Amino acid sequence: MATYKKRGFKPKNKVEEVQFDEQDSTTAEVFNTLDESASKTEAWVQKNQNYILGVIGAIALGVLGYLGYNEFIQKPKEASAANELYYPQQYFDQALTNETAKDSLFTLALNGAEGKYGFLDIIEEYKGTKAANLAEYSAGMTYLNLQEYDNAIEHLEKFSSDDAVLGAMAKGGIGDAFSQLNQPEDALDYYEKAAAHSANDFTTPRFLYKAGVIALDLGQKDKALSLFERIKNEFSASQEANGVDALIGLTKN
Image 1: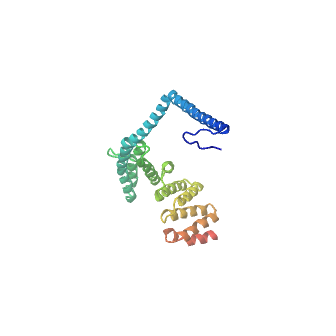
Image 2: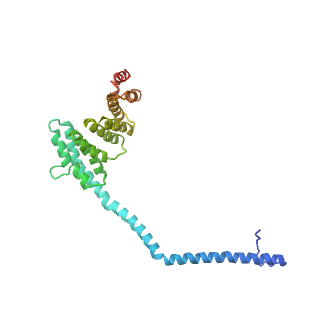
Image 3: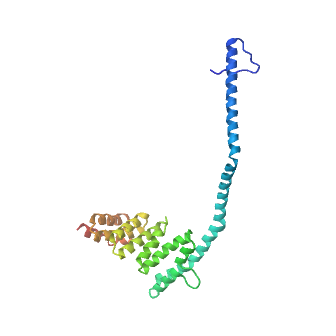
């Protein structure tokens, strides 16, 4: 049991003298151990100081490099790419409303014109930017409208987004391409992924409906019925709900 020694304490007898000596010895041993550990640590630091300083320097340079890259390279690159994306997007939007010239306008959207980049140029020149990612989506949808379905699938699969609408539309676009390629199983898979991407009144009933029709054509009546009933029960105000009762009746019969 440890005892507290007052300043100026002197042992009164042999027992206290032995205890006093033992405590002094133990204390000295502890301090010696601490001194030895400190000396070993100091020696190790001295021996490896170049390595330690190198690691610290590398970390500092990494942080400064990342901050510098982000501030002076990535941000201007993002701004330039976003600016370039405006021009082909204009052609794309015009193509959607101009039936007679849509193919030529879609082609201009892909390849650019008058010294301006198209979607394919932005994908190549601005890799890693948000604009390049959006260009993958737009290029995929452009190829889908041009009936170049393999190219549409290639670009839409490269597009990545958590956005409720765009993410679902990309997956649904892949489903449309597979449907046109007469690959209904793949189409059904992507329509279901599109419907599951997010719950909203625009894309969810749209792709539930397409998935249900494909499932019905494939003879998967239970799955088709489940999909159509989801539209009826969860999205009764949607356009797809207007004729869903007839499809439910057809599926049951």
